[in-house]
Length: 409
Image (cartoon, rainbow, N blue to C red; front, side, top):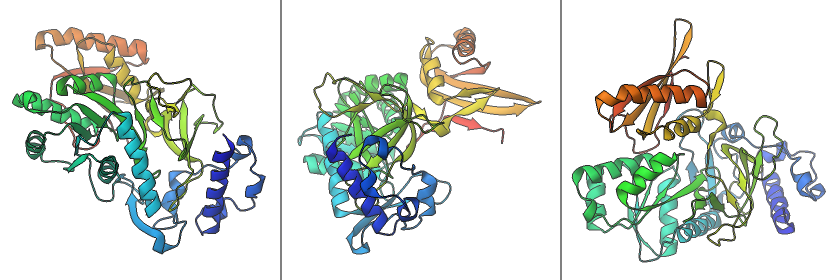
């Protein structure tokens, strides 16, 4: 942590404490001037989503109301929503970061950016749009759904960049192949975000669309998508350390871990005015990558998001993350990227059924299921019931796909 970063953090803390946010109570008794080093900063308490929900509706607002030009809300469907106020400068700063993302991905003002994520309270659609407009590219603001219209506009407008969730990008790729219109599609790049995705899924989308893919990261509480992106080398994601301070902690102890060690990402905003956040626990699992990136971008990197601390499920005493299932399937030849897990409790036992897609004919699937079962026992340490299904049989989503259904509770 350099002096400028520390100064911005202290300014943010003062702002949050002096303008009636929950930080006034949270940091009561803390003298901001006593925060002189990174070690001092790490003694500050964390902020969690529960704090943000308790602040509903506008308890996070750290500026006079006349300075707030917009609010956004998290995309979660349960519990009290989280409302994040934005000033005009926040909106501009977000667009600046998003424009950087596009430039890292090699976009230019000559690109035509086809945006499929949702608009409204969700940050996705408008974030993709503001960044593209700041870059000077042509925006095609489709929003989600109506695949027929998406493909028609993609052809007629000559879209060169697809912005989507990985689930919807796969659905579009499959439809393009099914309809035999790949030669009419001019896509060159895909900027994909909002959910984690495995390497098999990445390769399927890239191969079927014939594009280079870029993994974009963000969350509503911290502006939205556009705070980090992968580059051509696909070796982690560059993040903007002049706007955000990243830490990685052990999710159980809360202690900071060394760079290169997997843990939970914690973010502190450096310039956010409407709703500054201090040491916000994202629950996203990643690591800080060290050393320069071959692409030459000077900004630091985190690894691709490997999962979430709250994604973990416990089956037969074994802790399992979705990323482990993806990795296990990736290592078995003949399986595709799409899978679903059903967990049931029958006759006093947990039963975990893993459905996965394959192109293999019926007569070869028994051996494939046996291979998946054996590899899962070796790799994850649990006996599963494998179910091979045909390509396209598992549901596709215009938003985020649900991979794991726990029917035990």
